[in-house]
Image 1 (cartoon, helix red, strand yellow):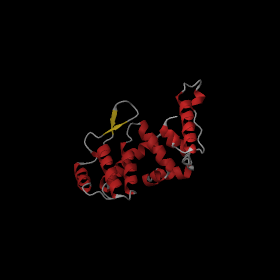
Image 2 (cartoon, helix red, strand yellow):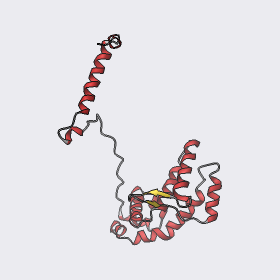
Image 3 (spheres, helix red, strand yellow):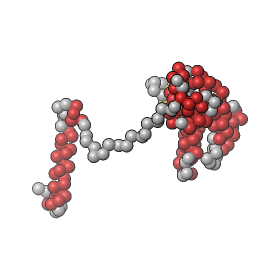
Image 4 (tube, one colour):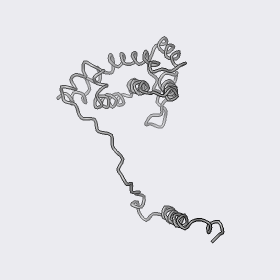
Length: 191
């Protein structure tokens, strides 16, 4: 044994041997896929599933985009519907703004503001989609709203995206919600 190892306490040497054995086991070629399974002491907590709404609750969504977006099941359904139509950028922007408003740390707020701007507002804002090529997720806001938002981002605050978010909400209310309400999926919910 080398002189350096002899000076270590016995427990350290035993621990080093134990680690060496475990690493050796990992480096061996597995005989089957079962060797890849690593046991964890506890299962990670799954987030609670959104409960399917009653037909009465789902009927309320027809008249209120706000109620639809407040319902976890409604939001998930609306997102899925818009993704199927390749028009999810507005709801994704709205959700990002809601998350942004909850941010307390000024540093995190600035980081999130930059990310939202780059993903949704900046001209030719790309976002990597499920396909190999980038899908533009730029929201459709007028020049004035964009200018006000950019000005607000000089000093990010919880209200920096309010004007743009309100415009996108109005657009979803006028355009996306009626299409969602006419969809087969929504029709099944209200039966």
